[in-house]
Image 1 (cartoon, rainbow, N blue to C red):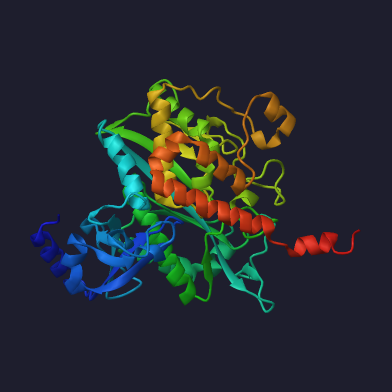
Image 2 (cartoon, one colour; image 1 turned 180 degrees about the vertical axis):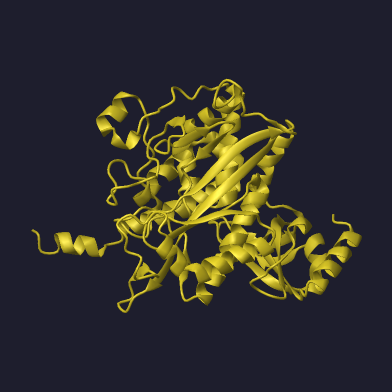
Length: 445
């Protein structure tokens, strides 16, 4: 229970910053930010007991409509209290879910906390940097989604300075807001699709980074609307262009010692075992890291319609190899599976659980792959014994349902609800009759 003195000091600090309203924010199982407003005077209540929500109204809780377990309380984490520069007078407080006086087992932030505690029991911390890619979109006169900038039509859009400058108003506002919120920005660039950008901020412990990613998304949604655009983390908006990833840069520490570092290799033996666990559970991890129907338009096996794809389809690792699922670097690795729609708490929790399973079982990740795997025909991929990722959400959800390690990491409630919701999403998509089908079949037979 927070010290009342701490709450009072924090309240006075926020008041001096002009804050009058708290945004009590939590993340639902689908990775969407939810919450409500409270007067600043209710900070102590938010930190001690939490703000109340109807549990059954929140996606993925599986809570009943009545009884002691029908009420979901978002209990504020005082360390996350942060004035919002783009919303003067408001401060965000990240909340952990509680139900019936206990930590709620299906709260994504609580799920990640449990995996962080497993690391802490060994004296370890996981440092993670997440790299969000996103699109700026608008609807045209026909109601179709298009890149917000009609001049963004370069044949090779990567690092296009002209397109970057045309969106400078939004990007400058976003970057300044994040800087004012205490985040250390590293770089901003135009990515490999029309209307696509990436903003990188510095790494931190995994829970802090997940919280910061949600803060980034909240700022970006609001500021994009102020600039006449829609911020989108849809994984693959356009069939003929690359999609958006959310790459994780990962290292494991014990105090000041990087446990993945080795003087004679890219990764230590512990690091190799960690990535072996991640590679070995990639099919199930897909459901958490690539959690939408649209995600599998990005994770294609074979040539992308765009001609260029940085999305990994092959379960392999290689030093500085962006065509492999895991790109190893000295003392760290880049997990390239997650896409922009991933719930950062669930994806990170799954990563830790899979990695620790590899460490505990002393798994070996197999040979490093230095080649450009995108140039290999599928026959060679198969001949080399390299697995491919699931090619549909339905396939990934089936793998997650069967995976006992990830089921234990999520907990029975979250695992069951996630599988149920994602199976329903896949079924709805599979039964949908699209315009493509009418064009192909309506008069064909």
